[in-house]
Length: 463
Image 1 (cartoon, rainbow, N blue to C red):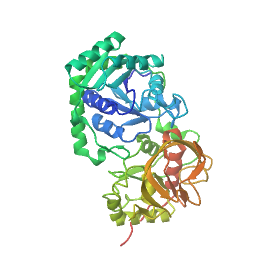
Image 2: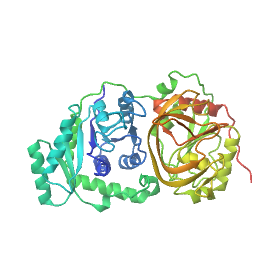
Image 3: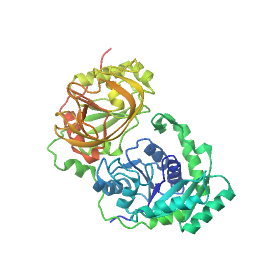
Image 4: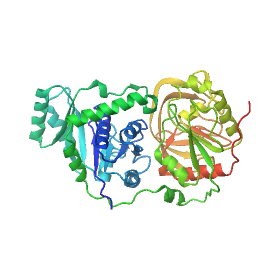
């Protein structure tokens, strides 16, 4: 049984300021001396970076679509181990989930799975008494969701706050905070959402400090903490990466193979559980920065290049020719190379006309069209990441196009929402736009580590 105090920070819709409020709460409670565990509903990679900055701990994702509802509580308990408080930031509107699946993957579903009280962040800038009707609707829509209070955001004046509080008092919903408009707490955005922490470290630190100060001034932290402590015990057991990789697998790992993992400002998209699973499978995870490092880590036997923003850094990535040669040499050796989205672009011949690694016979370019959504897929062949027939749920999120999008041996056969093939498999390379959460299918990490162990370490390129 776990008694971790917890809160879910939700909103009626996107754009109301829940990321600012959630991150500010995390930072304010951390500055008050609490150990805070940060979580984000859904497949978002960027918000957890700000959460990690606020708490000093890894930001974690809770996605009932990617990992299944049964995994939400175990993953939460794993991520919140040793914490005094857990704050869970929701996704979109409180009841918005995977399209066509009802409540699946919604903030409401995660709140019910965690038996956690919900605090609704409401953009009050264009309403007064009507706020009570809005909040009443959200509070009464699903009796299984405990909407326990409201934080009013973008309040215009003292008089405006009085009107809002009076209306909500009539509705019987506690107001746990009222925040004025504050430009200094805003985080800049671009084509795929907020700019990641890794690209604006100093400015991000200042933003998080400002968010913490705003929350301390405008929210009743004592009441919020008491609300978090009102959450009942959770009966489940924490997810364990060692147990996960040990279940149902025959892949064995000898030695301690080095799996290089791309990081830095260009490749910021990764779930914390991936490195934990690789380590549990017997690998040594070595992080490197393709913008700065001219060679792969010493002894590299496999490579993982996750998501991020290579389009923003195409010139710098292209200019790092020594590293590109190192990646080409590793791929040519037949070693496992797994690339997701940004990694797929980096392995291509070119990105917006700038030379990339050239491992794949394909070219990438920016597009005006956003590709976004959950996917179901099946591995079409045995490859470095998955055995043929392995079924996964994933997520696509990009504004780029790869031509051709699928090689002669595609990585995945998409089965939902549309049937198509996608990605490239060649020799030891598995490259695709699809983001997959390995906690849902630990055999991926086990297979990658075993494949790495079977390869000799990469020799440093000459010249």
